[in-house]
Length: 220
Image 1 (cartoon, one colour):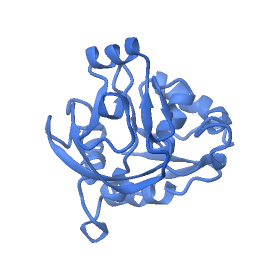
Image 2 (tube, helix red, strand yellow; image 1 turned 90 degrees about the vertical axis):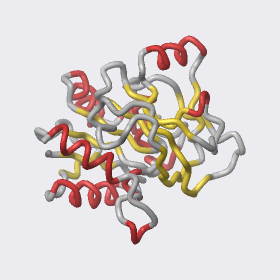
Image 3 (cartoon, helix red, strand yellow; image 1 turned 120 degrees about the vertical axis):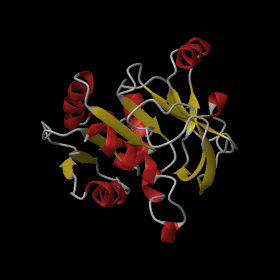
């Protein structure tokens, strides 16, 4: 599986993702600067966590207008898998590639701790390494992780099976405990917790490794 990681000014998890991808694929991903006009031929594009452009205006709002995002949108429309983690999730919603918005946490505080999740769907390349209903633990690190959408959109997400992960101990007030959502084709995933920070036991857990190894198994 060939992967590319998009790097924005203020990204701080791009190298974490690169380490996780190298660990499971045996090859380093392409690191693509946000000003790039095109992308290499890859099977997976990752928008990493961090604080792109300092989270000015809104988290992800400026990054969503970066030149590279036009290429990301084109690849996504053609079926290339796209994974947005934390700030990457925020960028995907700001770019219109995923529904909903990520607002300030309900407690108005930055959260940095492990959280418990339930895998809602295991029939996508992103979640193929898990079992439906499996409970896992991944760390969060965000101030704007409160997922919100109007009632009609939330119903559509539920009816179309677009909820990928739910919080078991909702830390930020997200509607319906939603921690991660797919697009309608389940080729794009936005996820607030950080699977790339849970791929080595020495670092606190390995529940995130199955996301990356599942992608390798599904995409080759």
